[in-house]
Picture (tube, rainbow, N blue to C red):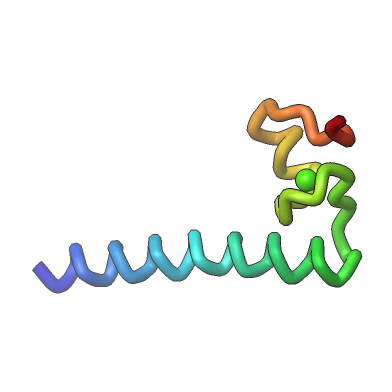
Length: 55
Ligand SMILES: [Ca+2]
């Protein structure tokens, strides 16, 4: 039971950390974010999205 809780907390911390890093790094200009969606463009390319400027 406690193992499941640890795994869930670990997953939440990991996902939260990635989201926090994405928003902080893009808003501070540390990571390239051409389409201003707070996701570093290299991450978008990694998941098969096109991070090029929209409209
Ligand atoms: Ca982006």
